[in-house]
Image 1 (tube, one colour):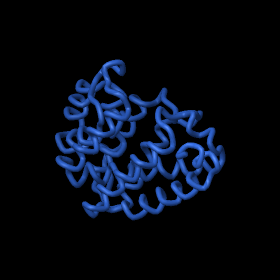
Image 2 (tube, rainbow, N blue to C red; image 1 turned 90 degrees about the vertical axis):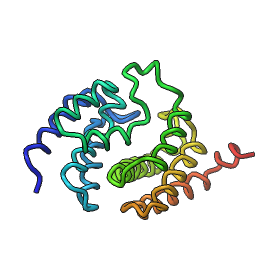
Image 3 (tube, rainbow, N blue to C red; image 1 turned 180 degrees about the vertical axis):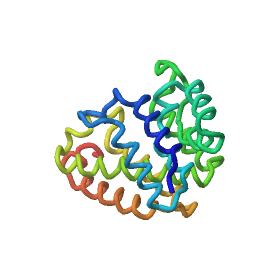
Length: 200
């Protein structure tokens, strides 16, 4: 059963992310954190992993190393280790971060080489929820969707396929569902006339 620690983590997540919204929308960012934590619990993750699901973006997007140290002090080494593994940057200043493409490349290498099974489960839940949202929004918005992102559809698909391959190779729960979602998104995107123009 979930304890007061989970409640405290949810409150902490709202404190860190309460002013943020999902890219290109007015949807509170906390909705994503709740979804990730829910997917973790449904896949058999324990309370520590579910808490890490709530906090997986807190260090990357909300304070870097100092935030990670605070998470360690409040929620312990296990949660902090998962959050660290899920972060593609621990810079406290966004201007000091590498490019999106470089961060994703290095983070994939880290996940493949060093990440714990628990961190991979949180990663799978994170990417699955993101992929589901991208798929739903692409159905609604079409090519206008890509205006929200720093990279285009080809790079987005390549990234999600790479993550999926990594997670499937490690036998991570949720990777099958992620693969099906990414395949559906890929089929829709590549069926669009704009894709032919992009690749010719």
